[in-house]
Amino acid sequence: SSNVSRLPTIRSPTVHWKEVTEYLKTEIGNSDDWDDWLDRAMFAYNASCHESTGYPPHELVFGVKPRAPSQKAIEGLGGKPYHEYLRELTNRLNGSRQAARTNLIASKYKSKKYYDRKIEEIALQIGDHVWLLKEPKTGKRDDEWKGPYEVMELLDNNNVKIRTQRGIRTVHKDKLKRARVMETIN
Image 1 (cartoon, rainbow, N blue to C red):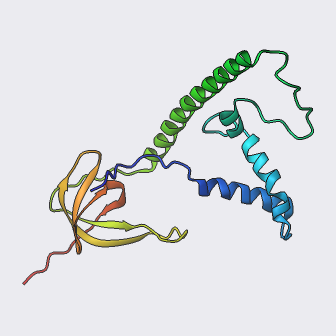
Image 2 (image 1 turned 45 degrees about the horizontal axis):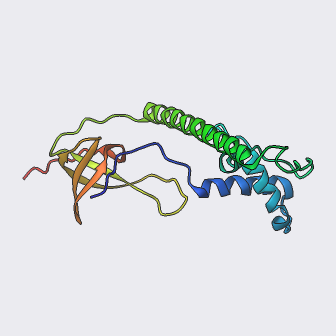
């Protein structure tokens, strides 16, 4: 079984494309020439300082701040020998990447703190019955619950083993809510 510990969600490339798409919508509206604007949108995205890292992606990859096409290109290496320029570039890259890592860790803990604030901890015992949140396959965010299922085992990291129709499954407690199962009287 896989590790199902809940961690703050890391932004996926899909999220980045959504940001680029939003930029394009604001610039061109309903026009069909979006592909003419794509280079500008990508430059704006890569040149913008990102909240989680504190740096623009361009600077983290190339070690220098991005230059707008209107800025004059720097001639040569600024009179420095190549090995000196390379050493300075490497130092800049290492420094900005280390700072970005530090910022990402701080951002991760900030996200976790916010996430944990919204979560209600449920106390479960073996034999309890729970509903399992069904993850949507589309972008819809309607909560659908499956079950009820019986709690079979309590694991570390807030994981729980439950018995489903397909067998035993390990899930995180934040995907569960307590079910009130009525006893049948015979």
